[in-house]
Image 1: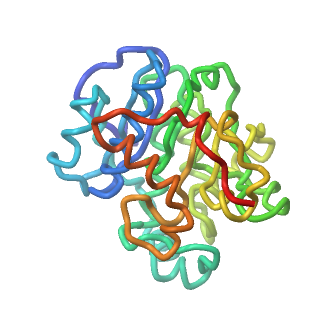
Image 2: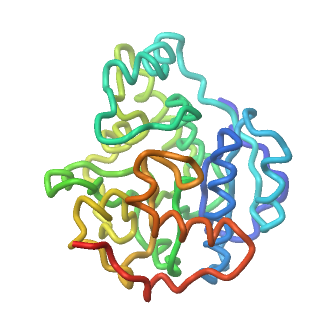
Length: 278
């Protein structure tokens, strides 16, 4: 089995925040994420797994911010697995009805997250490239494997399902090998790709508070749950803040916050921002 990644520079710390970039759009998101981590005051490494679908010029701003770039490969999955999880077939069998997945989203790319179990770190916190870290979250390195927040964005019924946009992990080659074996077993179908797989692989996952993965739809679906001083990580699930989309005006305060982090100027103190209208 390939090691899966080729680091541009050696690790600088035993712990790392890791994100995944598979195209120029997610590289744009990752720049805001990396800057938010820098502004949080962390001393841990910030590592970016990136595939061959990302040009060097899209990755350059991440390197400028001090991110460790790790070129990675897609997982060696079977033709049957790839066909089952292709974008058109996957979305046909498991359509998204609550929001719009962007056109640049390729479901098979999601499984590259598993490569982080091959990395040369003792402890990892994974963050999707469409997240922002609003307060220091280094305490998550002391949490066990596997911790994630519930996929709450519409109702209390969401609490039974985890969201894989933020989670804690302990890299280990044995774990990675076991994962790949289970992932591509004959006849498998992972409805929500890596999210469904990880919940199956870690059935006793430890629940993080929703404030460690606050999904943007909470802003208008569950406004009573939104409290800026509590929010550590903001996650722009479905529509992205750098896109033009139908929900943009409803999410304007969150999008404006993302653009502040995506730029080079000052960012507002999120703990003092007004909450959603109730």
